[in-house]
Length: 511
Image (cartoon, rainbow, N blue to C red; front, top):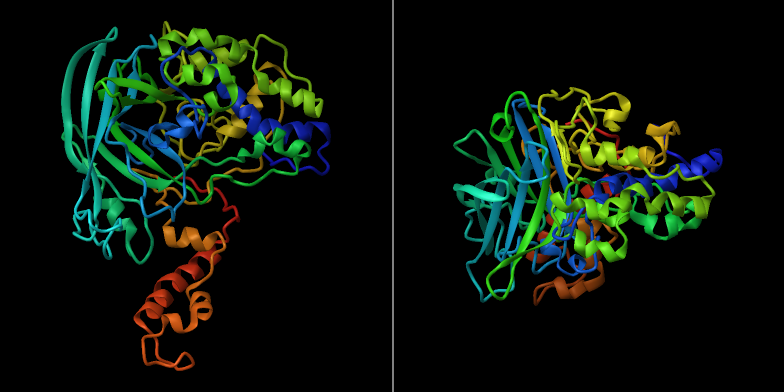
């Protein structure tokens, strides 16, 4: 699909751009329409009033796909803590100790959990007398210089009609990959990432830690639909920000009901412990952008506390979505006729013959047919472009869910063929070829320089004698330890950062 610009595209081009990001919400809106109070299912970057004030518990995105290098397994990725500023110390980003981070599997289409993988975290501090996250260069996850660390347990809970059948601890005290403070603190972050991958006895493997935010889109749609005149388009608003990720790769046979029913519904939730010791669900996420764009203010917190079996209460938000009406009001592009049953069929039930389970109960879940093998060359529009291994059959990291959702919301499936998009077609960082597939997080040093801060050389020039040891001349050739460190660390990072060109979009790459 060709990105839409403001020149030479006419009224349809305008709709294309705006609907591009807005429609994505509408599309997923379909997924949101059938939800009840309890949890939140959507690409929830600050999507609801209450959760926006507690980022540690805020789901941002969920991905589920057949693993490209291990097609007998499925990989589920769930992210939390939106808009992590890479240099946001001295208190960097941790999972909450008083939360349950859950990955839910519905393997029979009845909108109720059959399997639940529960992650719980614990924070450890070696030295409480320092303000530092790390007290020196960190070479490994057990390095004594890594002052603040986290570990986690995983419990596998099996349920039947909402009743717990069994609970098994499948992992204990697994180390979390830390926040990427910077080059001086973590000279080989890739090594730390690798050490955080943990294999389970079942053939599964798990990862938890910081990662580049894999979602790519232009979020400025909220400025009255891209500035009201398309003056704000084509920028990946999430570029340069990180998230905290949980990734779990599981054998397909472990999560499906049987070989005859390979379709699973996936979503994630967060439960927070109350003062009384009980846990209350505060966030839920399945398809992207549902609670952000589809649900009105009155339903957002309710949606975050709901479960799929009660999604019918939000149905009208999907059958009568607000987004197409807004686009029509501002850009005079006629909205498709209502009710939007096409959105309900595709995003609440799954596509018939592809990822719709038999006897399905409409609910907002990310549905994946685990029998569809991954393709060697994924197409970013997924099913809309003939690639049945992609969105809305699950969601891969490279899937352009904004463009796909936009086209469907604006009537692609009901005769209104279109080629809409938000002009952001790929993530700025390359994804990995093996588990956990996520790109490494932007480091604090590179992140700061990329956003326009001064280099090590500039700092030395501005501070002058402040960086010189006593007795040396400010005009001499002697270099202090501080200056040397700045030159090798900050200046070197500056070259990398400027070479990457902060706002330059890279060409899309497959896994």
